[in-house]
Length: 154
Image (cartoon, rainbow, N blue to C red):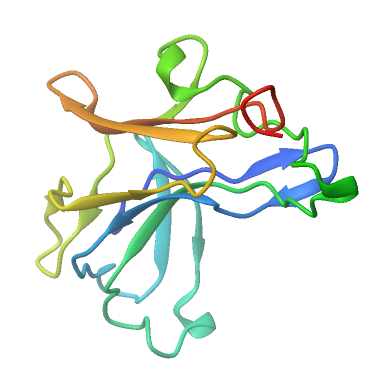
């Protein structure tokens, strides 16, 4: 359809987690004729956010973020044991770590674009991490996640 953005929302035993490991795209993009923001995975539209929900995002965005978040209340002074993604660090790669592949956006002329200038953010690399890459099969991609509290993440 109009905008393609592969992303993830992680549901766990504690409920909905928002992005903490983030992948930033620093370029504007447009959603097309109706002003709705669509999410698509592969060739399937899985949902959209209607234009009526937004005021400043009716025509473009200056940043897109993909990733996951775990709420860390540091109970008893320790990091949470909640997994992010599959619970494996991204360095474990395919079949173990969670990933998002073929990341694309749609520009103002309704053309698919692969993001070029990406930045990663992971404040607790010993608890959760992110690895970014690109290849011919999967386009722009990243692996992310981790186990939370572990011997290196007290």
